[in-house]
Length: 251
Image (cartoon, rainbow, N blue to C red; front, top):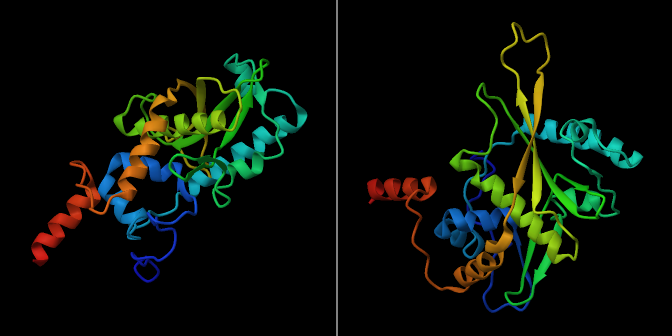
């Protein structure tokens, strides 16, 4: 990673005097909530956190789920998982579906005029109920022996992710259901042998979102970017604690 990673970049840096709208992704908003200092260093000064390693197994699960749900999207009928959980909906068919899914094209976007920010986010899937309400759906993959739920503290990021997606689609004039779903795939490690394949148990977890916090957070993130001083670190930021400890030793 050190051969290719350059911590200082010259692109995608917020300029407080520029009139050009600045794009801010859903993940960067979550970074701001996690640690304003890391967010400022990244988006204002061009010093990003080291990239994580790709989760190729999770990506494979996402790809296969999208292919599977797309079969029912084209046919206009519900997926068996939706029938099993008695969800009265079908996969949403729309000409922009692939664009909304594509992180490289930055998914669905909304220009937030008061801050001159373009908020972006790439979704996994969307379903629609008979009343025309869109249902935001996110795919997750894991492998654990305990019951799958959304109760862990670190899963708060999953919930915020869904709420930002709900907010983005509402801002694009779609009717959106408060309840979204996580399609959770749990790798089964209880088999007697691997036998060249990994089997998953799939569970559908409903989540009732509340996107009332998003608007204020967009304003707060913009205010942070407009400032000329680096914000204080979050108390629980591992990146900042590492930089502080390493810097102290070097000094």
